[in-house]
Image 1 (cartoon, rainbow, N blue to C red):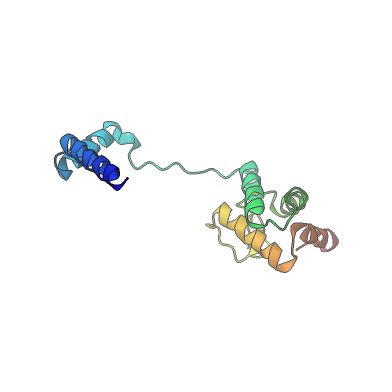
Image 2 (cartoon, rainbow, N blue to C red):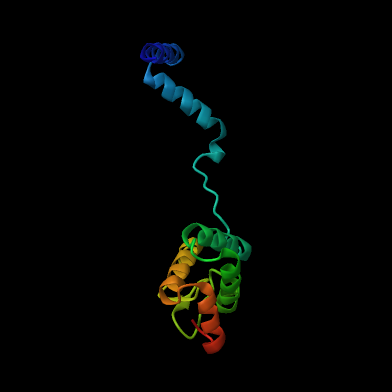
Length: 145
């Protein structure tokens, strides 16, 4: 088996050397390929965080990291809670306090990305209330969580 693998590896090296005799030839070929469409080079598309995308991300994060929660019912509670807090707007700013973002956590900065806001909000809920349904019950009783 080792002989077959060695022979295959040797053949692959020989073929690759025949195509690209030196590393500089390989780099030149790659650069020519990449330079065909210069307008697409180094272009990174920005994700636009809509309310539905934020909800989808939160639900996926809940099912991946908080397996102890019943995703369906707990997400329903989370959806209501953050719907009341920020209407799932990642730029929501509370003028009466320093609360910001989707979960309206204190101390979040305006440049905090939506995924980080959601992750921090879920961690806060787990730490303080155990699960979103308890946080939602607290919000209904007191108007905050």
